[in-house]
Amino acid sequence: MKSLLILALCFGLSQAQATEIKPVKLHLVGDSTMSDKPNLAYPERGWGQLLPQFLLPQLTVVNHAANGRSTRRFLTEGRWQLLLSELGNGDYVLIQFGHNDSKESDPARYAAFDSDYQTFLTQFIADVRERGATPMLASSICRRNFAEDGSLKRDLADYATAAAKVAKEAEVSFFDLQQQSCDFWQQQGKDNSQPYFIQVPAGLYQKFPAGTTDNTHLTLQGASKIAQFFVQDLKHQQHPLAAYIYRELL
Image (tube, rainbow, N blue to C red; front, side, top):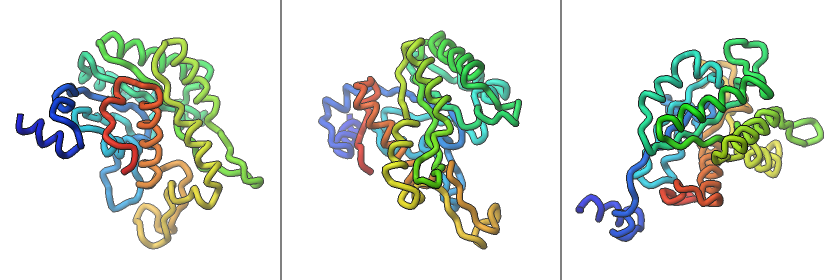
């Protein structure tokens, strides 16, 4: 009872509200744009790493996302089987791939948007449901890739459309982070969107002695923004997990 009172005070809930909210787990499955980044000295963050900052502690976020993974590689490496072994009845699983699935030059990762990518997503959904958990799909986030005329190149649009198609056919919740992030980067423009992505100077990081500009991976600010998009969409869709939203602004 004392712990519930502390929870209510910390998060602005009544004691009755704190009692009604049941503990649940949300498993995240995806690539480097979602994964945890343990090296806090380097500015890169995954949006799944920032997601708990928006949520009540009764919703435990378990981040299985890993750098460089696609639907195919996540399965062939045994990562998907490991997730299934940890999955409990009543859990939720959010699946987001696309960045690495699109790499035709790498057969170990490539999954065509109009065939294997959809097959893998469909399998993931079925596997989650078989274990009494709830699957959810999200489209991959947008790269910061501007053309000379100032328009944003939406080079992962086919994968976003494919994910939406699978979600509709399987009747699972879909979160179009591709559309939201693309629209936001376009609104910000080439210069103002830079702070959401990695840009480091020369002579500071061992991995990038000459410095680098990375238009795929997110900074703390970028990861926070994508996490915010997801939280806001939970609320907009009146998803059951919306009950666990603590705040929309950090």
